[in-house]
Length: 286
Image 1: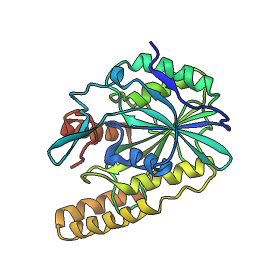
Image 2: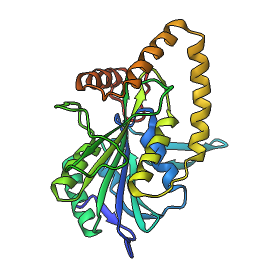
Image 3: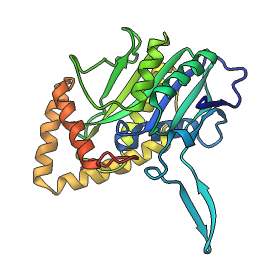
């Protein structure tokens, strides 16, 4: 049984896929916030996936709305491609909660789908916890299925071998790349001491995506949220001497403009996963 149903894929122009899933590799909800700002509310579905076969509803429970004591609506987790026009191309945005089941089968169906749609490139967005300060520009790490695919002066990294728990988005990346479709990943580094959503990283991902696609992407609303968060973080840092000293050390590292070492990223990622207990949904970095 196929996991995907195509709704309307007519008249696609130079389609590019952009992917962001609600998983551990979405620290600060950065990538999912970025794609939601990208597609808005009116983007039509191109294809949907069989949620009943992909999700554990006890882990990702549907949301029940109760109006005046009467159950009125259920909102189920779903995974879908939505279509938005950027410049002279169609962008197919794949977003939703990370599936719980059938990752290999999903990857096979995904390869068949992107081939049928004649997708030109696959771009994954994500965010990882890192030892970076909130007072500097959000660093972006890149991945690429072959040299020269990354744009906007983003460097692949870190150097050497990095072994981390795989996310479903990575399984899809590998399958698509093995099928011969150029696959790129842009991953924002989120300060590990920040709890909750981190809109500066969402803005950075949208700016990076815009440079890659050579288009302007509106991020004004997210930028306003980022500015407000920066003010709150600056205030909190100013009143705590230990936190201020720690941020200053991170600033020195950032000003050296060095890529994080693999063991540094592994340490932050392991702590991130440990603190969130591997539960589905957005994590909290403390």
